[in-house]
Length: 311
Image 1 (cartoon, rainbow, N blue to C red):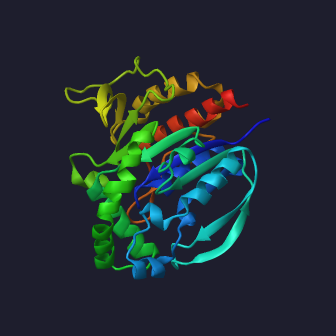
Image 2 (cartoon, rainbow, N blue to C red):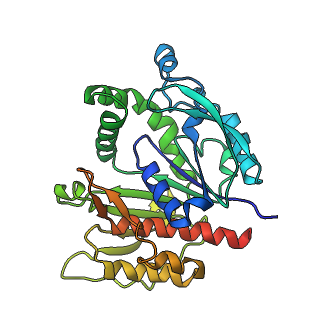
């Protein structure tokens, strides 16, 4: 019997989980994807957390046992009655009946916090932008969409930092891919959508063979680089793509991915998939990010690869 392929996207608040999730869902086809947010498994609402003095990042503030149980049900293709937490009001809403589609994307803060939960994922991604960039993103999001002042957001970041250090960042070690978007040396690059990406590729899943990668040099550092490094003490491959890389250069990478996965040919055709790599700019305009497109494509590759083992 077939079962859903489950992708985990874990990272701290405002690390870019929802943006990456939406993009991958568009690539796979929204009709084929069920999206789950693990923040819905909070034990306390916003008011209760303030009264108790606990942050949403602490495991004791979340029903991790229920989350694990429901992910196990989804993995076997069974429906769940999932709780709903509203980030806008900070309160809980009526639970939602959810039936898994062919693909399930689970994004949130504590998805890899227990072994039982980790065992439900076919592909595990961890988002790790620089902390100063994440703070900028969180201030922008929470002031524009959640009704906070900048001072309130900064105080919340400071309050949450110990739990981020103790409970969120250690989950990085369990991921198959670590995604770090970061600005280039020119500060203006962060404001116009040209973020670079650093992809840590662990040997826990078989990645495409990028050893034949063609890099372009103009007397300086090539915009696409492949190397070896260590992450949390373990050897990894590292693929970096600069935001100023051209479409021609990025296409070299995409061809390597697509030639190993026939099912990706329609995804690699930009005319049939114009949403690949699209991101909202600081003033609301839609920008094209090739590093984001490549990241979405690589994660999609791994999800489609997983279907070969569980057709």
